[in-house]
Image 1 (cartoon, rainbow, N blue to C red):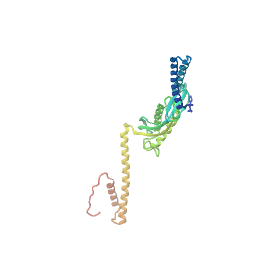
Image 2 (cartoon, rainbow, N blue to C red):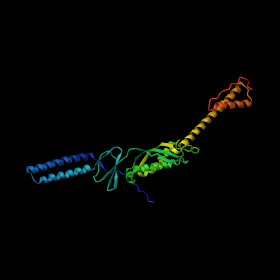
Image 3 (cartoon, rainbow, N blue to C red):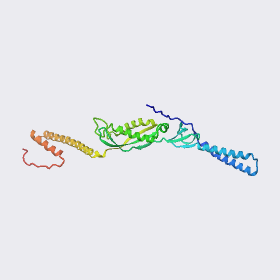
Image 4 (cartoon, helix red, strand yellow):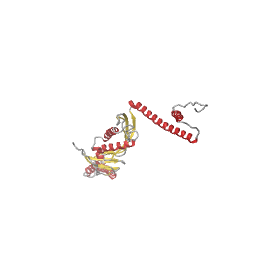
Length: 301
């Protein structure tokens, strides 16, 4: 197996370009003066040996000024420039402002600002094999310009591919909902899933000199072919939970009613009548429809 050779970032030897810009502009002014002096000397019949000196000096100054100007470049805040010579990396300049380097050095700018991207909506299977749709928002930035530019072919494309790969891998370890015991799920534990996705993604993109600052799920849903079935299941579970709560409350109310009747000696009921009363009260309290009362004006028995 061939090991990957990393390209660590280092500081480039560059200088401030403000003084050199002024110097090159002054050179153009001096060259114009020398050209004027040469032409004036030739027209007025002055010393002939001064004419080529003026003209030659002007040409040299112009070429030197152009050479100085060609080495100037500017950097904004949170921006870097990788300096290389014939493909050999020499360092990175991150100082903002007008900068200068020897003109035959190549400068390649790269943004160091924080970026965010939204992954494509992927159709994957969760831990239980259910097809789901999932997408994530990733916040990332370049921290090592040398690795980003020279260790991968295209670091932006590299990030996109690694986000998709990591998202598929993380999703396969979680159920959409209703995990086993206290197992986290994609729907209920989105923050934890995002943290795991961030850690996995950071492990994958560190080779490109990138840092992942945040990762969150932006879309999560069942695939269309099973969405209706899963919706009916969720509705059934909600109905069962509601019924269980209603029955629990009804039993508590019946128990309280029987206890109060007994303590206040309002009526004495044998076991058979208690069972009938409990049955009637539970029917009234747990029924879906409003009960229709029947008034008994006769004796209890």
